[in-house]
Amino acid sequence: PSRASLLTGLYAFNHRSIGNGTPLDARHLTLAQIARRHGMRPLLFGYSDTSIDPRSVPAGDPRLLTYEGVAPGFEPACMLLEDGEPWLEHLAERGYGRLTVDEVYATPLGAPALFAGEDSETAFLTDRFLDFLDRPGSDPWFAHLSYIKPHPPWVAAAPYNSMYERSGLPGPRRAPTIADEAARHPYLAWLLDQKFSGWMGRTFDRPAALDEAVVAELRAVYLGLVSELDHQLGRVLQALARTGLLERTLVLLTADHGEMLGDHWLLGKNGFWPEAFHVPLIVRHPTRQRPGHVVDAFSEHVDLMPTILGALGLPIPRQCDGHDLSEFLTGQNPANWRRAAVYEHDFRDLEHGRHRQLAGVDDNAACLVARRSADRLYVQFAGLEAGCWGEAAGGGRTPQTDPAVLLDEAQALLRHRLTKAERRLTGCLLTPEGVLGGYDPL
Image 1 (cartoon, one colour):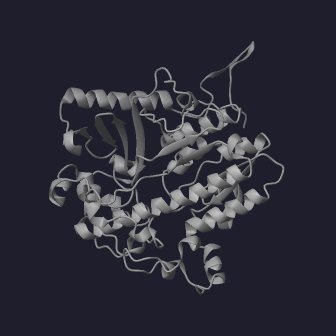
Image 2 (cartoon, one colour):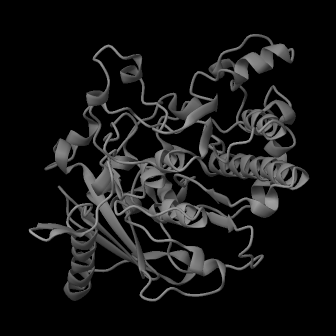
Image 3 (spheres, rainbow, N blue to C red):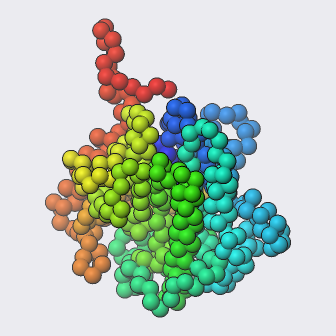
């Protein structure tokens, strides 16, 4: 869902591609389609996980058999999907043998990968982009480098697997016991009881059952993978500088989701806590530079499409729910900027129906929306009671039960939904004098 928001500028409640495999409606324009209309060449390195609208292709189209589709408008430059090709072919050519993805990552937790750092997935994708930079052609282009890491399975090549001392890392942020955590909300009690055998390349009975040593190992390897990615992004920036492109290239770094890593006794990206949704955003503009400047204001995935189109000098379509962030790049604070971030999670499981274990939760009620402000998190469920927690000193989260506070938060979410509902034609009126207002072309 977050990738759909990144590429359309739409909140999930407007684009409705609410999970891997849920199609993206073909009427929603993507960043790549708009750029292509204006003479640019949008390139995809990695993956976009955009499931095709089944109404737009014949019934037997093979793209209907996978969630790993290409976002409309992109030219696949180097696809790197779950099957591991063409990276696995590269490993074979480098002398590692012809292996499957499972075999490549079948190493003990914390041990170095069987491949060297220069042959990792992250390095491989970087190399393919650098190959392109050596022969970019004459057309204006932009590239979406979509790295899988630090996504599981958490296996890092040396030296990244041992770069961080396990005992020196901060511990998870969580209640004293699993039972205490489960008591916070029925949804958490259900989530903490889920079993994930063979989950994400590892066999964990339940993430909540992991001991502290295993969690510390996972967190250390995760940070090692982040450091590896940082190194590879350095190679990208160096190549842009070497080719003279850095001073006329907009660079944005972000992620589609966070990772619980033992916080609240959870792993993965499920739940409603900010750890699964709060992601970095680093922007380097070729002309509006304030190196090291930190912005504390809330930004959202829906802001990236308007920001990129604005930097390209292209019109921002009415479909976009977000805002151009360019004023922040010059040290300005836009007037009436949002004071909270809103995010959603749809936890329906159409394959196995696990969400139906929760009383009162059918397929259409297996969803939540959260509003995170500077000092509070409010979560509204469709089929369960709402929850609200305040940020406490020392990093804890305390329940907020004041009815006035809950009403304020619920009304804030309702106002957000009302003002951000799809409006591509609501500002347009047909009159005898002609069309008033405006609209986006199809």
